[in-house]
Length: 435
Ligand code: PLP
Image (cartoon, rainbow, N blue to C red; front, side, top):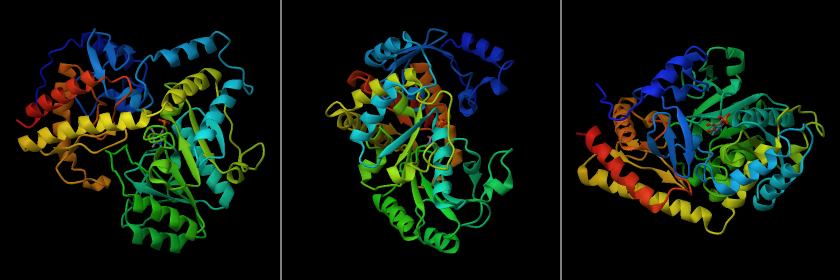
């Protein structure tokens, strides 16, 4: 299908061409290359509030929000001021600093499930370190993960299910040795019997179960609380650690993330995205007893030159202070619910096969009309509709992440008018896609 360009994209196209000479595929993270949608990726020049402007001067209402970190939108004054104040005093010392104490305290004072934290520089690093901690703490090496959950580009998690059900994983990326992949058991989400069977068969070898409690990297696969509770109970029963990867859901669906929302206590939680206020920050946290396994107290080594960098800490602190304002999460959730419900109502009226799963301020355009809870329920063929919707929305000034498997984020910078505009434009884009 030919996509008619009604907005100028020449400068982005030229810069993308140039970028191919510097970076593999012209990008520094694969999904940015726009391969699942049409045209060259947009080179964004600036962002303010709910909008971004590209190098061709096109303005977009942004629902990608840098893939989740920007819960307060772009260039929020409180975050910007704190960052600039901090930068003026020097950007990195490689020593402890006051800001990391302040951010640490703010989190621990307001999060029931974490007693000690360690800051790192990305979500991947948080997950990688949490796995090492779980393995060091239990003295075991195997891990259980679930099909449809993404945990960053950690070797042992770039693994897909082998043939058969509860099989040893096989690597999903070149460069991940099969002997690393074999220590990862990949199960379908929600299969309680298979989980029990696997834990029984391998319990003396399994260090942890890792899950995205709100899987949001392969569509938005909202789980029942009872499944998360089942993971908790089975982890206790078989004496393995439960890790919630809350890189997306942490500080997003509530200050205490999915753990708080569902009131299910994991043993270790990983954080990223919102925690850094738009700067590279990750963290992992657990009880004091478990975290005391980390160096310099315990035997599990983990370090970082730029960990708890003061500028990043300042951004995170400012962002999380805003999140703690009374009613913040309730407002975000109800505005997102309203937007999603209106889009869904229009799709139903028109008989379009689309629904909009949403939780907190996360939403997803899901094709078909049945609830989707597992990755294998997504029909890849439907991505042709997403491609058309994405293209149409770019032409009318709305930016969604460039893949139909990605979720969207509503920020506190999105006004009522923005959300109404988005509803109207998404409905119009559906008219084109389903015509
Ligand atoms: N875990 C989850 C649930 C994520 O969504 C992501 C990134 O999207 C990661 C881990 C990796 O985080 P990062 O991209 O900061 O390394």
